[in-house]
Image (cartoon, rainbow, N blue to C red; front, side, top):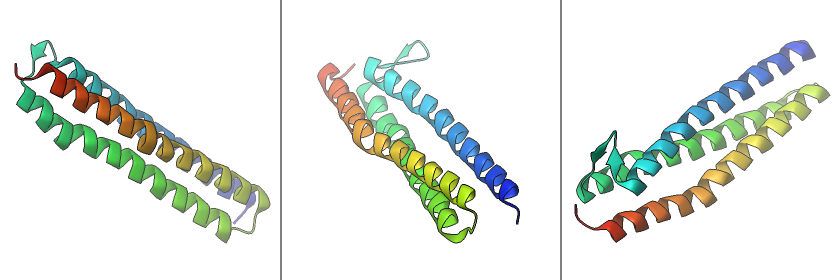
Length: 127
């Protein structure tokens, strides 16, 4: 397969990964803000609703974002190892590093973010 086709396919995969991650990132940010404030679309949330939303939405979404980026990094790395094209291998390795950096973001600061949401829910108590 020509180098240009491999590079275009890798670029397409990288853009798709970026767009998917950014969409999920917006969902996570909105949900975390709603849980921290305790207000969903103008309506106060009970403590129970906030806990349920934390464990059934926010934490799984962060897990999805992390897992998706790790999976994408693995796919990019495998592509880099299996291609004979130097330029495609370089692009695949760079894409793998970007995906791993994104996954590291969701594991480390994302964990701190979840802990701060838990703290906010505990602080406000029952509503």
